[in-house]
Image 1 (cartoon, protein in one colour):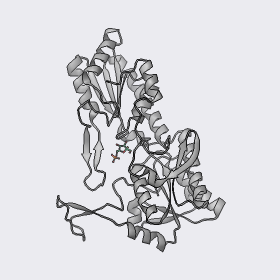
Image 2: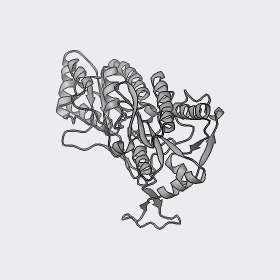
Image 3: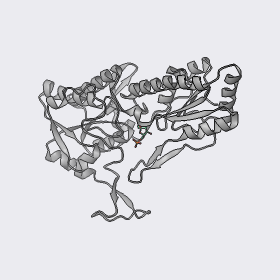
Length: 363
Ligand code: F6P
């Protein structure tokens, strides 16, 4: 099952799990469609060796995914057979996990491989607590999953963002503008930090280091007075002004995790233009960062993760997340990962290196 937001490398994991299970262990494999939603709606299909051939390099997920469904807090909408008695009178959340376990039992499925991020792993840990055998595979472009040094998909997202910022640099320089580029990452600044450093961003603003707008403006103005006629500001969608709030673009009411961030680049570009009188533009990279072909690094990582998930299952493990720690593949209990996220430490070596080359973090 692939859960949460899609991400380059999902198909590479599906392929590795399925091929290892079939060729090495003569197992039968089922694919669950659209994440936990497919499990709730009993939409499962057998996966053959041929079904997963030629998908290594394909972005997205052949199984489909979903980032608004949690079987332990499943939204029941008004107007359906179920009554709606939430405070808003529109939606209430129901635990449907027992019927999911029943569905797996009916199909004689002994173990679940959950490929996902923190939301998916929190539910996976809860299923494991109920006795299901579950192995998690760490996915997300945000790289914010606790317990692993890296998730697959992150390298591709950073590559995509870096290429985009490289392109924006030439137009910023031609027009002598400040270009504010917003990247994804939710409450963590990993994508902004890595793509910002890789593209030589002049300012990098991340959620972990609240910024002061005066500092950002002064930095941009100083560059200007030194003859640098343009600046690149890379901002994480979750960045916020010191004492301020994150910018929310949408509330997904049927989701147990309703907040969607986005829009800070527009706010920042307006502020910078008003306060510095330098022409500024905002660009939001958005879902482009989640799409497309995985990089070779992510294909290799996803294949290694998928293979390791199967090896763990066969060794009798019942409740683990595959991780990469200090360059080595290993695993941690799912219960340790549930409900946590991994943010960028303020003293991260890359922040130190960026500061050394005069990158401004707005603090
Ligand atoms: O977790 C992946 C991610 O792309 C985040 O970076 C972003 O905040 C969120 O998902 C966007 O979610 P949606 O696809 O629902 O807009």
